[in-house]
Length: 149
Image (cartoon, rainbow, N blue to C red; front, side):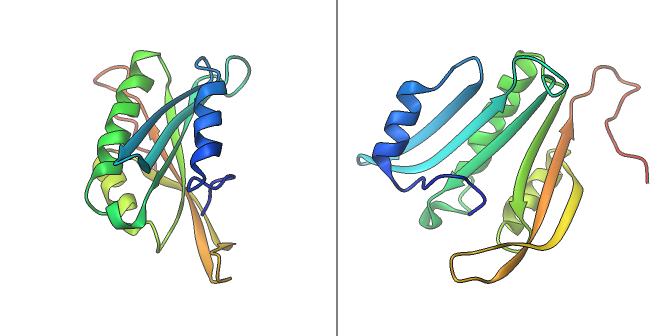
C-alpha cells in the first residue's frame, strides 16, 4: 500500500524491470507459475547528500506473507547494499499491517527512526501509522550502529 505503483500489474512490472537503471535500482522478482508473487528493490542515488543511503521496497502477495519470502529477499538486498558500500538502509512500512516484517527487521538491527501516526490509509480508507525503519552498517567493532536514547 505504500508503494507508488500497482505491483499486481504484471505488464507494468515487466516494463519497469526491462527499463530500469541498474546503477540506481536493483530488484528481485519472485515468480510462481508465471505469476509475480513478490518484488523487492534496493533504490539508491548516484550523487548527492543521499548517495550513501539505500531505500528498500518489498511487496509480497498476501497469500505468501509471513512465510519468510520477503525476509530472504531482504537478506539478499542487505548483502548487495554492503557489497556496493552503502552505509544506511531505510524501509517505509505501515505499523499494524506490517508488524510481522517490523519484528523481523528489528532482529536484523533495524530500528524505528520515525513514526507518523494515522498518516496513510488502505484502500478501504482505514488509517495506519507510517513507520520509517533504518539500519546502519557497522564499519568497526566500536560502532554498533545503535541509536542513542
